[in-house]
Length: 284
Image 1 (tube, rainbow, N blue to C red):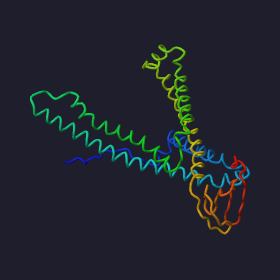
Image 2: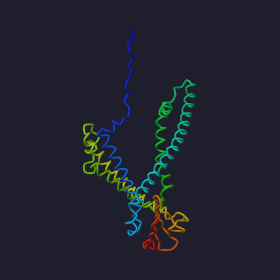
Image 3: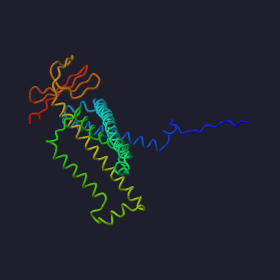
Image 4: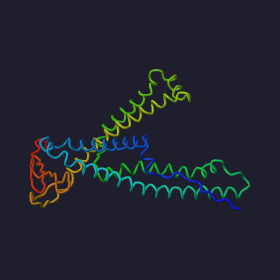
């Protein structure tokens, strides 16, 4: 008599997992973090717009501006992944081919193969992953700056150096190793001090989150500067005809800037309204 065959059940993703309190809390925190980054970026852009116009358009363009920011982030990350994958595979092919060829040549001889060559051959998959993420860390900021921002390294080198130094000092101070260096290092490395490491981990997460918000705010300012240095477009609209630069767009609403003559003139137009505000600060 044959016994019925039983199939092993594997856990599958379902809506029940989303009903878990911990999962909902994690998703809510992630959503709030993304909204914080987008809002900080939007405010960094709006800081260059006159207050008279800001009070009229700030809410109307928020969703479309943050969505555009998210699109360029996704675009830069996706393109970076493609290039990084191609570079990592090229590196893997070359390194694996060289290591295998040298090992085959050494194995053909009576002398024992070099341990360094054997280790290189075994570590090739690991080095492939390292090269992949290293390429992403270089390509992503380069592509994002090229497509969306206008960061001049020569003009902002001092600001970058001060910011990096401040974050480094804050990271060191949070460990409290300056007060009692040797003792504190031993406490951090002690396996029994898991609570201390968890506290430091939370502190560094807070520091990283604050740094990310500050960086997002600054990139909003850089986005405004990039648009102001782009070529003018000829706009044909029932409320406006002429050359201008498009700062923001949402549906049939536009925020334009006419900088042919100083001071600059900011123009808000939609299907029914046209508002102009002169930016007196542009004369400086």
